[in-house]
Every structure is written in structure tokens, then in C-alpha cells.
Image 1: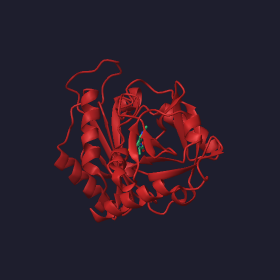
Image 2: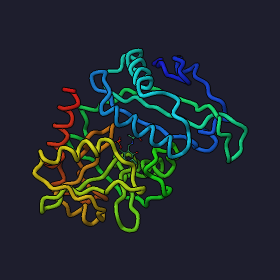
Image 3: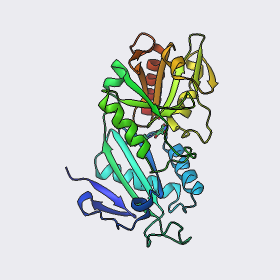
Length: 282
Ligand code: PDD
């Protein structure tokens, strides 16, 4: 199926969008990315995604090539040209093209790639049955707050999950869950706490996680921002994970152990429903 993509501000058929092999994104994973969900042809929580994009760029010293209004216009034009109603819009910015040297010229022009992907976000088997999750060691670098395209640890984690018949891998460091390979991790404790890691350099500041914790009043739970162990998660009343591409995804099993009833729990189900309702209404 043909797809219109954006390369450095130019709309092209995907087959005609060509990048230099000297692009530092390819040679060094010297770049960052963002993923915004699209429902009914409109982006969800997009201002926060574009703010995090700007922050990721600033943290690795790549100039932001566009204003927020320009990013939004490009995203909306791509969504329209591809007739996307449900899915995601992807942005990647790399430091640009140069002779291969680790250090870089400060004046390099960034490379910008944008494309859309069709995805079923609303009708999902994970939402109705819950996800199987495995745990893997967290092999990532020390700046996980930056949405870097250096995703090899997550690629390996997701492949290990797929091989195990699971849909997500939770990464573990020093005995504590950091986050999912591409999601923020939560548990609900028997005594009424919604537990998730605080935003430090150990995890990506998830945009969906922010939106979900803002809905805490709807759940009657109290928010506890702290790390939790795999054993605590397995014994929890519920567990779930959040991301732009899954919204709120209940966990059915963690390393083969049923969490709660082993079915989507009431808190995850309710938060998912409220989040989607608000997203559709905005
Ligand atoms: N991943 N943690 C990690 C490591 C992630 O890669 C993601 C998102 C999240 C959730 O963030 P948000 O709610 O802002 O999507 C947490 C995207 C979806 C991806 O890599 O495709």
C-alpha cells in the first residue's frame, strides 16, 4: 500500500524517500523520536508529545527545526494525505548527515522523518483479555528520560516477549521494575494505592502516564510514585501499562503468574474507558 511520508519538509511517496547512509541517525543512533496516537483523524495529547520532543532535542543539543505550529501542520497534513483515522503519527529527528566522526559540527542541519501507521487502538485483544508480560534485565543507558532512537535493548526485550507468546516486557534493574519496553508500568495495591515510578532519568516521562495519573480522583486510589519489585507486581490487585499506542493495557500475567484475577481489573478498565472517552471528546 502506498504511503505519503515527510522527509525534511517534503511530502514523498514512501518508496521515493531516500536518506544518506552517512546520516548520524543511521551510523550512531544520534537522534530522538516521538509517537502520537491518532483517533478519528485527530492526534491525542499532542501538545505534551511535542513538548517532550523539544526537551529530548535540547538534552542532546540538536536544534528544534520547527515551531510547534509547524510540527502540528505537518502532522495534520500527513494524517489527511494518508486518510489516517486510527493509528499513530511518528516523528524522528537526527543530528543530520556528516562524515563519520563521533563529535559533530554544531551547525549541522537535522534530518526530519515523519510517517503515519494504521493501528487498531480502540478494539484491542489486550484490552479485553489482558496482556502477557515477561520481565527482562534493563540493559539501557543512564538517560532514559530522553526518547532516544537507540532502541536495541527494547528491540531485544520485545523479541524475547514475542518468543514467549507475550505482548510486553517489563525491564528490571536492581530488583525493581523500571518500565515496559515501550510503556510505563503501574500496579494497584490491595490497600488502595496506584504505584508507578517517579519521573527521574531512570524512565521515560510517559505522556499517557501523566494523563492517567491526572485521572486518579476517578479511581478513589492514592498515587504512590515509587519503584516496585516483580514479586510485588505479581501479588498486586492489578497491574497495567500505558503508552500512546496502547492507552491503558491491563496485565493478565507477569512471568506466567496471573496478576489479580488474571483478567483485566476494574481500575485499568475504568482508566482506559475514561481516557478514550476524553480523547474522543477533546
Ligand atoms: N513508546 N516508556 C518507554 C520506554 C516508551 O518507549 C514509551 C512509549 C513509554 C510511554 O510513553 P507515552 O505514554 O508517551 O507513549 C514509556 C512509544 C509508544 C514507542 O516507542 O513506540
